[in-house]
Length: 354
Image (cartoon, rainbow, N blue to C red; front, side):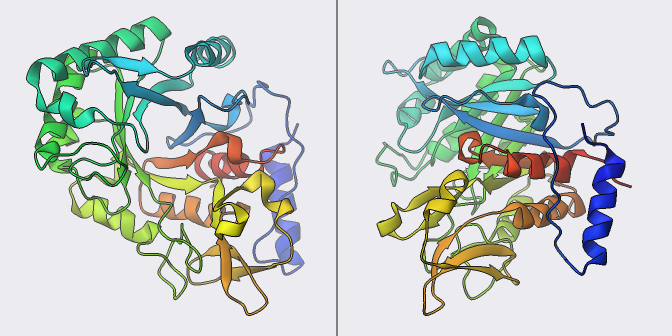
């Protein structure tokens, strides 16, 4: 079992050796072990856990789990859930072991449709909202997370309407009315802060999960914190500022953190952090402006942009410095077996070190 003092001493020793970004090696405490010596902040750490993965999440490194995904039913008036037995297993395990962990059903995801039709019809919208409450009660959940990608835009191959933004606000109002004030209502949003009337929905929501990733493809970073020549079409910093300008209070924002990289098509396009060792023949580099690592070919060209513990520590500090609510990551299964990324996020956001 490690203590705050042991971590401090390891960090201090690393700095004494001239390492500006120390890699703190720690022994994982047993799963579910209480850590009473830790003083925790009021930040949140939101982990997306997918229906198609098999790993069971360790709640000691998170405050919230978003189970992905539920979908608008084929009749447009309810909620369907992918792999219901997995959701039940996760709820039972976490409620038995760490009841403080909040579990939400994330409804939507890329290519998940029928939102536009449902939200446009008052009766369908209200029935959907009521069914959100049924799901919460039936599965023992703490709320729902809406991941409609994206209102008014059919880029994901789903139906869209110019009225989606207005109807999105009505839908969120109806969901809040149906689930009451004590259950959580959150949403995932595009980095650009487009498509949604944030001032309109702000009274109904608990917080917003910014999808500050997938913001570029090689030779650009997909999750740069700051703008550099290698940054994608937007940065995480710009995404936060766009949401603030759109009317979301800082204390209702979580910054999205990818546990995967985006690489060349020859790499399959996406590479989970746990699989990074299989990508060979390239040089590891660090973009000191964008504050993220990348792999480069022989000419120095970026071929894969990703996150590592160093970049996540910097983003966690950004979250704290800017008064954001916390961090969110997609997805839990992308981390390595040692849990290097999830532990970095937890320690960077949750542990009080001053």
